Length: 116
Image 1 (cartoon, rainbow, N blue to C red):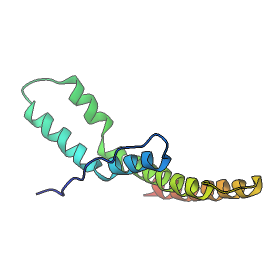
Image 2 (cartoon, rainbow, N blue to C red):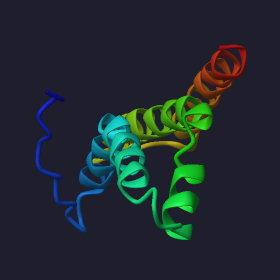
Image 3 (cartoon, one colour):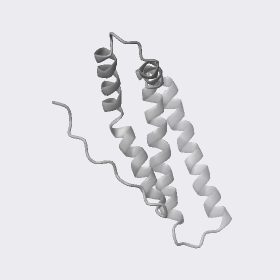
């Protein structure tokens, strides 16, 4: 039996972090999507479904690890950055430093993705 799936969080237009929670949800259950598509392809083996083939190509596990790592990195760091900027007065140098730190973390994460 697979893991239980939580309901998809509903994004709130005025709450940016709720949109990132939806992205994280999809990243968390990405394997379920792969399994679903594989099962559908097996069930439809007697018929040729271009839509299923295209979906399987887009969800190719060979690219999934890199895609999920990018999704996780962007979501986590953007949420953190938005929280830091909420309701506070910031100076250009503070924002620059935050963005510089984020860029440095991205380069490190990207190096790990391409090496792994």
